[in-house]
Image (tube, rainbow, N blue to C red; front, side):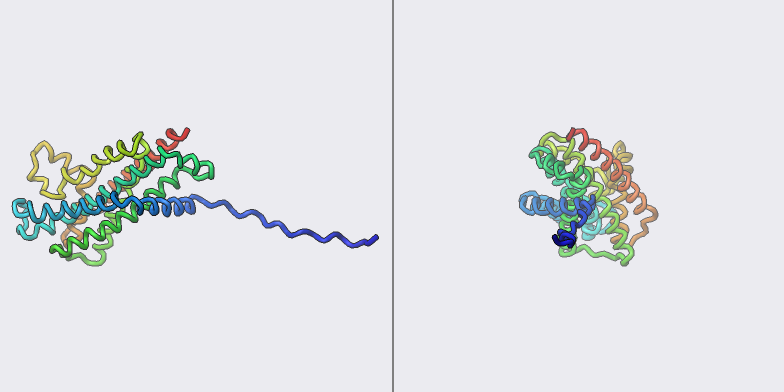
Length: 271
């Protein structure tokens, strides 16, 4: 008999590390972008409504609204508010998308693959942020075509972009929480109306001083007003004081509350 040792089999490689939350978030964001690209009606409406409102206010109402600036410069006053309005309309589709996922049963399939709730929601928010940035770019391009001109320095543009991005992310997380709270996509779309309504009782379209006295307190101290004032001052090269930091503090607070509420609501909905 031969005394040779048996030939060893192929070496077994240790299993690779399971994908982490960031990888899951990237996959969920790509999925949300693919899904939203098929929902062309919602994309067109979230883009067309802010543009239509900007054109209506500039060309229909601009000559009758006194903002303390020349009437032909009303476009300079209104564009920052329209950018925030665009963010609200774009973020509203996140609530509908999350509600459709909860209703359609896809969440159970994700959980069976060990995908947690936070990456799923973060994927929706990431996709919403990308959509909103593209829509905001288009709206700003239209504003430039109708006469908007900025006197901002590069640093002012960066700070204005940071304020706008912070509000887009915060509003998208709030929409995700609304999508978990609503029991149907239709109800989710209805709830987001209140979020899209916030720019109206603010300094977006008219100065707060022109509103009724009983509305001043809310209009001056709601979260959208400092963001609009910061964007307007930064884009027009005006003194903004600490308004951008107040706006960023509001956005951070809203984001913290929205993420905490989303996690609690997701656990409650998936027990």
